[in-house]
Length: 292
Image (cartoon, rainbow, N blue to C red; front, side, top):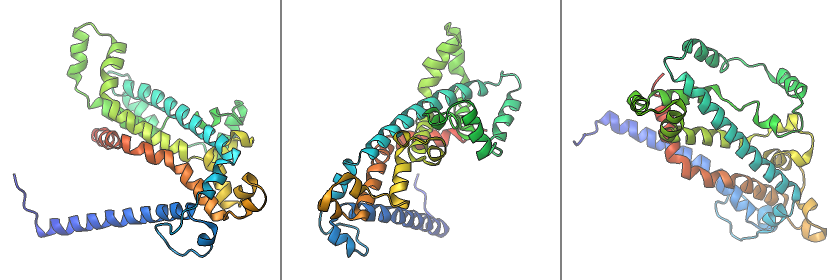
């Protein structure tokens, strides 16, 4: 069936496409500028204006970053945090959403209301700090992955997704003799892969980009995450070039080049992972938000 677009439809689509194009440009230009500076020699950077592509290539900035041991340690801490935190979030969110999706759950609306309430009210920074300190999690990885292990918003999204699954599948499984665990892990779990990928992407990106909790709870620099080290490099003037090199060779490296190289290195993993989860992300978000 061919649908002829009206004049208002064409205007609306033009506005939407123009907005998306503008958003893409404003996102890509700063990224390309950062990559260009990270690949440029010092004499070019010192005289640089606005360039999207480097006129000369120089990998000295990346060499300085790769020889800066603190970044590699922080990289390992961030990877550990992202994997551990995402795994904990997926397990707890799925196991919490499954019983909430059952209409036979006693006081189902009450439990859902309590969970929704936590989306609007929290204890605050100082009580959270005292709690983490009181239970002995300071300066440990658990202080970074446990406090935000379950998001009320994502829990409700997963619950809505599971609720939308056909009940006839579970009824057929029960007729064949399947118990609740078999239904959960062999029927519900495989069908929930899109929403699991969505939650995993949200959680992974959140853990990868997080730095504030590490600044509060982690005092040992060897246990700090990559984004906090990057913040020190970009905002507090920590000189990677002078710490990772020696003599005149280190001095020949422009500090902006090293900063941009560190920035590019920190965002590459997310840029590589996101395209593979994009299709699950869109499908899971749409299906999980349809039913209340």
